[in-house]
Picture 1 (cartoon, helix red, strand yellow):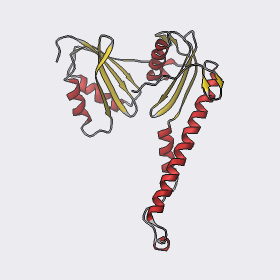
Picture 2: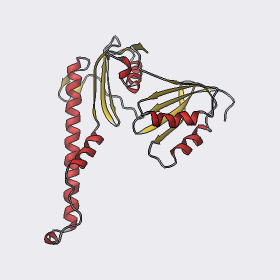
Picture 3: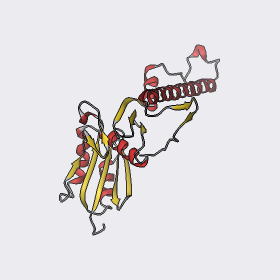
Picture 4: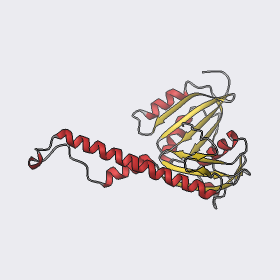
Length: 234
């Protein structure tokens, strides 16, 4: 453990906890733990003990109180740094939040807009997030949010299809045993590919249509955009 103090940053998402400590302008010792990980709490405590003691702790959270409490419990070992739970403001970081109730905009989306605008050096941006949910936020050159969208992510749509449709059997009844079992596997894989293709196309169409409707980003033609997308991973 380093004698110097550091800022600890946490992003509590629906699927996992992400964290790091700030070393100057760089993130160090990143951690990413799925909430359903066996031994989650012990793994989190082990990771945090390897970080420098914090002088401040900033937390962006969209999770339930029970999941947030798991981090609160782990942080009790560092009482000198009171955690700050961030909320989406009306205005901040060069962004104007147009939600009627500002706090209802997920703070992860607000921070993503602020980061994207900083990267774009004040130009208009469209921020697309694809985690548990598919999100889209458009920000004009003045930093004003022009459009917001949240929808099921491709992974969630695929899971819904699996849950709402009958599975292709791998163990055949006696009357159907003339059909090779390998054929059932091929049919299942082919259906999976068709589902994935359809979901990908539907997601792309929805996203492009929403981008065009915002007026912030317009395509020059069907297959070419004015600005190249920038990809980041959480």
